[in-house]
Image (cartoon, rainbow over all chains, first blue to last red; front, side, top):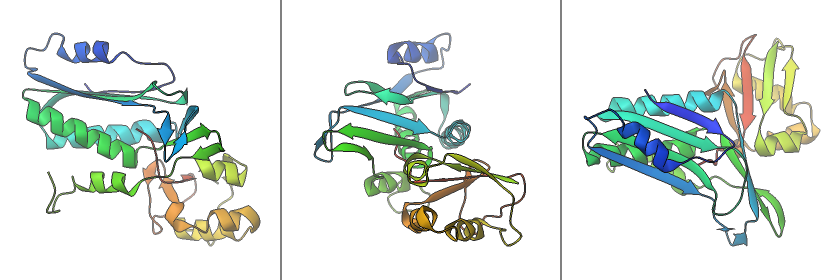
Length: 157
Length: 84
């Protein structure tokens, strides 16, 4: 059963990984990704960051993305945790964990989930910098990363 | 009635996060709803003018200009997402 959580509090990646392993001898591989708040973005130092989201749609969008991953790869379970509210450099932002029988499926699904999350889940970051507060602009490179997974593209995985 | 929601930069620039709107007769799609709101002028006209920086969801699913809007719908306007 996939787990999707939006929360203000921090998460324990080790504990989340252990949960996907516990009691399931089919698990041969677990891939995980942790996104972390940096102190520098686009040449400005970042003091704090506030993450806003669209309650309701966020959970729905993430569930759709997870369902798509489950349909594409033979994966056993998925955990997605995304924090909202105020974060500071070195704080964890997002966790994706995928369990599967073998590493290839776990790696691919984990990367797919992050690429789609970054372009389809309704979260917005606002940074506090010495020059004032600013909303983070969406990056074309994130759209390109997500497009790699579109069937029919020559560079599709 | 429809429920309008605004997030992130749009919420700040419009000075509102939510509004209940009696659905005007000429509003049947996302495109006609956007035109209706832009006709209010001021920040509405300027903030909603930049289609490139605008995303719309109807009932919490990503929508496009042709997506139908009907009474009871929840329509959200927001910038391209930047999570993760």
